[in-house]
Image 1 (cartoon, rainbow, N blue to C red):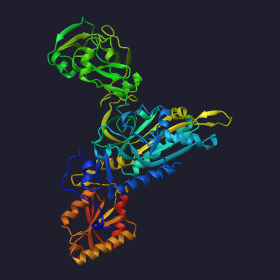
Image 2 (tube, rainbow, N blue to C red; image 1 turned 90 degrees about the vertical axis):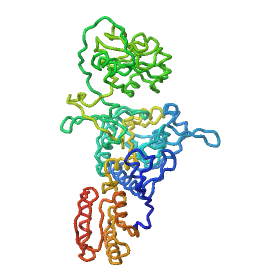
Image 3 (cartoon, one colour; image 1 turned 180 degrees about the vertical axis):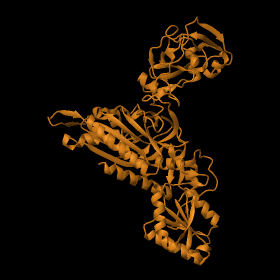
Image 4 (spheres, helix red, strand yellow; image 1 turned 90 degrees about the horizontal axis):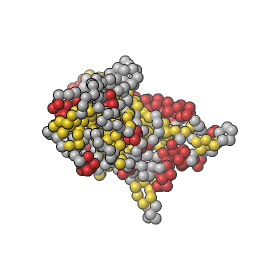
Length: 569
């Protein structure tokens, strides 16, 4: 392909709307253009990357016995009502009506419709197991679309669904997908970690997320050091043994003035106590009313754990006005004593304290010497805390480390959640009706492209792993008006193309500096420069984008050297 004929509208300035590196570089390098909030057009270079990622995915899914299908994007509400998710999924679900007033949604995921397909086609145990997958657009009405392709309202996703006779079969399918995902992201040239995770609105019990490690990651993961037990988890799911705190001795409750001291850290400093002795009290609204969550002052509430412990569908932090109405005071001075109008849920560590500090539900006042169990009794005591770096590993006890990650894939063991709700059954060898056991497995295709950029870039632009680069090589003649240079560049271009190398020729009448900057911005793994010396000596400069190293290579052996480099990249 010749650059003069390509649609690659590069930009010199960073667009104001872009926040993270991948968003900035995809806009600047001419990969995407914004159509609406959270909705993007993929230009030719981006589409080539997407097709390469999809091809790797297809090969790995097919290798494990997957069969590709295509399900409808528009899904009838009846199926979602049958599964119970029509009202549970919330405002992220794009809902619409047809001309007859019937309710539909744009598919954010496809558990319902594929279960409906299988319940209509599978009758016997002889038809199982099944691994069915598709690659298509998904739609989620994100409250705040941001970060370009990392959090959009329309995106490309691969979703595979497994259908098995029993839990043992599901274990086998799950392991197949775990291996397939590991192979997929390895082949894409990414540094990643599979981590234990929460299943969210999809449901199920066991699940792993595949996290690409990058500073722009929205998720925090904790993990054991490389040479340890291998534990890794999203902080939403992560557990750690409760600390053994120096609880102190029970003393008489004391009301003290704390003017202007609202945060746990400020109160602790003002009173001269350890921050973990301050009981942090946060109010949440649920469909069952207000709930007060209690954690030590140096901890944060894990809202996923709290929601599961309460078994509620909706959980949101209460606003200042709600707190004022319920407690008679604004946040910062709320405490558990006397909160009889709501459920109290305490973290295990809180219940160790015998000489604590808490809000007094009075402006500028706190209680000292609070003793949980004596001064207040929570209705539920459980693990509510968000795990932090240096907390002990739940498996081996070593201090956990922390990193940011971008979720590019997730695998779930659904069990019979959907087959039971939708009546997907089969007859076993004895003619008995059994519920099909399911799993689901997703990869964000466009998100994987963005994550690759987050992990592979420098100040000059993108550095693509060769396996998913839009093109492998760019040939740059220094002076497009020099017929000898152009002739040699054309010969090299044809030679590489005939050898099966994905190559482009920058034949634009631009200054060499412009061509070099564009080549680095787009991120071609290899750049071949054809200048006056190349014409004279028969040697061209071959430069590696990732390392910056360059070498002079005879034109006669150039194709073989290019292939050698691509094998390494």
